Image 1 (tube, rainbow, N blue to C red):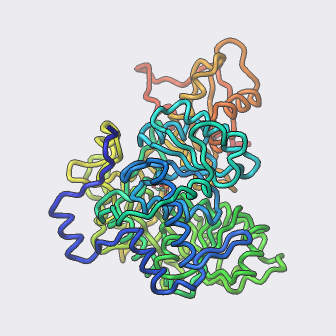
Image 2: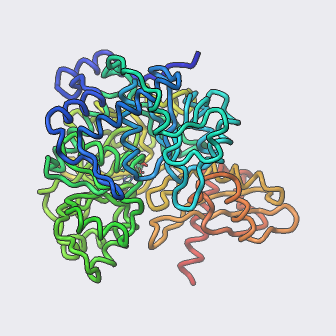
Image 3: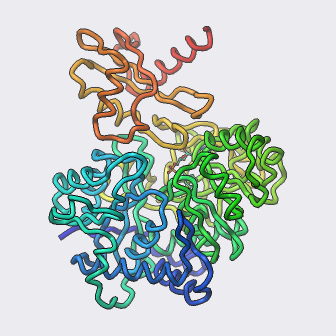
Length: 549
Ligand code: OOB
């Protein structure tokens, strides 16, 4: 028996969130059915040469649902989904929702180390992949996952299952549907876990974030309202859709909730995205800051007509005010800053906010019942305008990670506030400005990397005696990673060490950008210092050296 996935709020909170209309008792499968009933002929999804109406999307989801159930999967089972931005993503995911199965969202960049960790922690029964994407063949990876994680009995391949089809457990998505019988009634209840998001992972390995239908759909519905989505919306999915931002803030699910259209871009750069904006008359999209900078550089020179674009959302990492101010003059659209987290809380600048608020703040929370505390290290509230630790609780912020007792004790207060790890200040009107963070992770172009996790990998190298990983400001990425390494004996070449990291079956964005060999780490008069202090000292030394150059 596998342990059920749950996410539970104390009864008095759940009652309040229902009474105040946040939680409306919808589920993802019923939402899609309602949209397909209401406007079945409207185009829901565009990707490659495919254009699916809402009715087609529902039919494909039903077919996938029947296929998953025919494999022997049962409601409540977990399924790791790792797909690029292709329309089939939605057939799979709404198929899983329809069958009462729970998707666990991995990013296309994740490799064996990450996928095996997600599958093991979620006790996943199946793993859905694309055959190939961006030069990478996911089928050998899936074989390795099946070999390493005993609960994973099935691999479902979108595309060609290739020679692997002869292996037990590999099924093509289309093939999976062949044995489809009639579908049972809807099984999911609104307070069930609908899906699992992955945490940025500030310490050690990433944690699993179970989100319920009620809570996630509230954040999607309210986000769609704040962003003015409706049937005329054309949302360009430029970032990988499995990430919480393009998925739900308001993202692809928000576009579907509002009866609008999703355009899937297989890559986020201007060369792929700009032609799509022109062809499909895209009205809104979301980017991380480094991509926004690329778009801002490319836009003045492009031959493509970008005038349909009304809103550019930027989030995942801090957008500097100087860059923020160029969005309207260069792209002719409204900037919206989005400061969110997969654990819940999302802040938006509003579309009609004054330009200063839009360019200089990271927005304010979605819900009147988002409780925001800004406290010093002793837990005392700091006055508005001063920087402190951001804690939050509300109708779409989780109360616990899955199967992570120790992490839960650190990440949540006794009364259920999530410690975001972000340092912020609050301005009048509740607007937040992100000033830094208390935790040791690297926010590399919006990808969160745990220093501890990377240090663990480096320490496994035979010529590494000790390693400390820090974040360094980077003009383009926002932050890059730098590893300080004490070699044991002869130092390996930095390039060789990076190559070795790349071969460790981890997402490539986790390979340190910079490696600095040192003979020892600083100590204090009393002797050893904590790793946290060590990271701070080494980082400060590096910055001082760089600025004196
Ligand atoms: C989003 O979600 P995650 O879970 O990948 O990362 C959350 C963390 C935040 O705690 C904060 O440290 C950082 O990413 N962050 C920002 C930011 N948006 C996120 N830091 C500064 N400025 C911003 N605008 O990244 C995410 C989830 C939903 C919507 C948008 C972003």
